[in-house]
Image (cartoon, rainbow, N blue to C red; front, side, top):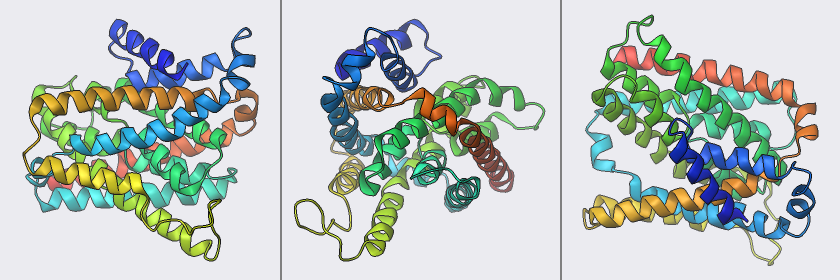
Length: 321
């Protein structure tokens, strides 16, 4: 069912290119969980498989994400831009986490939303949820919120380029530093020019490169907090999750220049398919009545995080372009 959902999401993206495939996957998963003739099956017989897709396929997709990380190209932007991206990620992550706690959001939602806004949307949320052991519904609702805000950015940010006095190069960097998902970055930046698109993708890849350190830091913090606890198998959790090590290994392999372009294309296609199936599985875990009870606070957190990431990245771009 997760595979069928991913295929349907691909069809939606082909028909309406402005809708990213991963966004369509989440929405279709939520819809499947609430359609009268499907919801019983989704929440019953299909639940183990959909949960498996949300966990295992997400991990494999994140490993393949490392192959798309051109570290040499990213470093060409210069150390000033690297410092700007670090500042944006840190301000967004800790600011969103603090605001979420103040708003009283339940469970791991503040952590997951902070990660999604700071790094790369749904992929980052899935990665952190793997090490935090987050509730499936918290993961799904966080993915839905971050995906919604990222999709709105496709329409809103291009309207602000002229009022903010941004050149195409500066606009591209602003988009790359402030929009969540890679697909949303491409959709937003391409409205300006090919030059803006190139800058946006490079800055975005720099943010993606921080996924592994952030996940490792979260894993270390949780391990320290739960010191003495053991996993169900009787072993202590690994300091660095295996899929994070796989992400780093894939990025290092890409940096060697030994990976042919055709292999990179196939890896990108596989990554999109795996993440789409995983996000369909996560979306199917959303229960809208439960989400509605915290919807106002979650929406307020999403708006606050959006203001933080857009504002800090705008100032950073002005200082570095």
